[in-house]
Length: 246
Image (cartoon, rainbow, N blue to C red; front, side, top):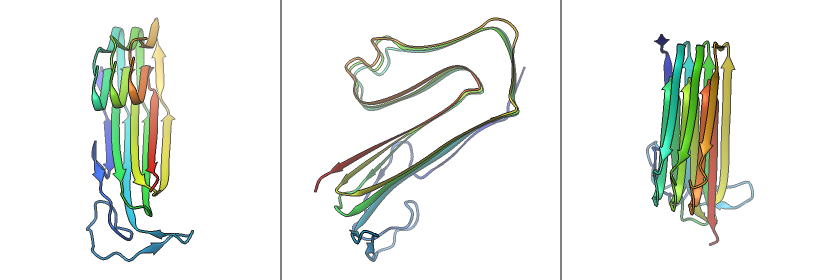
C-alpha cells in the first residue's frame, strides 16, 4: 500500500549547464532580468572599481511528506556498472531503486574576462521529511558502483545513487572562471526530519559499495553520494573557483 504526496521544487537561475556571460562595465540587474545599456561604474569598499559581473544561483527543495509505505520480502538493487568509461566533459547520473525517492543534480558555470569583475555563486539546498510512515521486514537494500565505471574519464562526474524508500539526495556544483576577478561564494544546506515512523518487522540489510576499479585513471572532479536504507537526507554543494592572474 502506497500513498503519495511528494514534490521537488526547483528555483534555478541557470539550467543544467549554463554559461553566464560577463558584462563590460558596471553592475547588471539580475541574470534573468532585462539588460540595460550604459551601466555606471560602481566602487567597491576597498576602492577598486568593479567593471563586470557574472553569477550563478541555484535553489532546490525536496519535500517528502504524508506518505505511507508497507513492504515485506523485498529486494532493491541499484547498480551502476561499467558506465561512463572514457567520458569527457560532464557525466551525471541519478539512479534510484525503491519508492518515493527524490534526487536532483544541478551544475552551473559563471565566467568573466574582466580583471576587476565580480563573480558570485549562491546555492540553497533544502530537504524536508515529515509525517511519513514505513513498515518493512525481510528487506534488502543495496547500491553499487562497479565494473570500472568512470574509468579513464575526464571532467566533472556527479552521481546520486539510492536504494530504499523516501530518501532525498540533492547535489550542486558551481564553477567560476575569471581573470583577476573577485569571487563571493554562499551556500545554505538545511534538513528537516520530524514525526516520521519506521517499523521493522523482520530482518533488514542495507549496503553500499564502490568497487576498486571504479574511477580508475579518472581526472577531474568527482562527487558521489550512495544511500541504502530509508528516510535519509543528503545535500552536497561543491564550489570550484579558477582565477587566472591578469
